[in-house]
Image 1: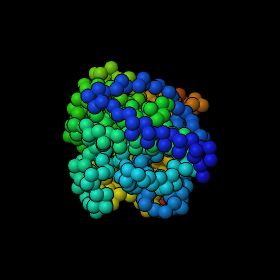
Image 2: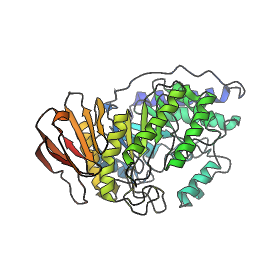
Image 3: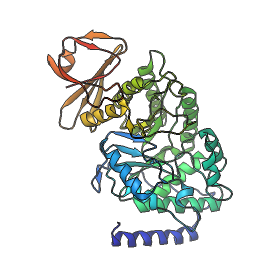
Length: 460
């Protein structure tokens, strides 16, 4: 239950917004000055720890259409993973669902997701799959009947927000400010949502304006730009070109944190190098425009199904290995946060089916390996790549100065790791590889002769 004082203040703010938005409109030909960029580093808020490095996204809840008690129960289940970042809880929080009509608001389910939840959130505004304008012909019930994800996205894109329309701009401003005001004591990180990527021409307008509206509602909020998507390399490069165009128009000051998605095919012997290369290419785009901001990888993942479009030839073993490699490599490259997509199960026909870590009530091996990383170095201070040819070694240093090394080899190799670890023996923790196994095997090993395989091992 929200405190009475907080409720009164919130109602006052929302009521004031109705008056302000209704009476004061920007001249569409006179773009207002962007508020100064805030550089606030948020560590805790209301007992929420924002320093955690890792997160999961999507399908966290079976559905936000479920009743409130089911949502609370689902939250307690997610807690078992550790207080990782959560990104987008599931269906039911898009603009057209929160504000069904201009005069009605429906926060019950989202309140149930956010209230009594100690996880840090990265919440996508507008909704996860697009910046849809919910009025003037958009049919949410029809959108729900579109089983194929591509069809849903196409329908949403065809009803995208157009900020050159004064009414749409007014509606969007009210929506953004109302949502941010409601949750600003709990949610401090907002993503300018729209998962269909950057190429759509209206992206600059809604990135630019949404950033301003978020900052006006909460000057301490941290805003992430719409992610550069990379389901495959072709999509990544299409989005890189669009990102360049958006920066050239002046969007370099319209976000506080840069973010991108990258999956990439898992076949071939250059998997690790491709992850590094895509990170470097993204950072080079920021450097081109003199942008020095944190980088988050807000989606990465390997699907466990062999017929996956995202990860052809995938298996649960490969997924169990890759969750460690992806998080370790991106962290060592400099990513401030890394999110796995997805936590829960996707429906039939979803492009990312099989990327999930949890399937109903069953947890895949990758789930337990993510938990291992959370427990071992979830709040790491530094991550450094020490070796990266056939043998890969990444060193994590925790705030208490303890070190954890993650090591693997593309092809099996016996190596002397004593110089890296500075000692002749180490405590080794092996990843879980098989469904139905719940405990990580451990042993003390001689660091002068360590046989490494494709399965990462944790050394302390």
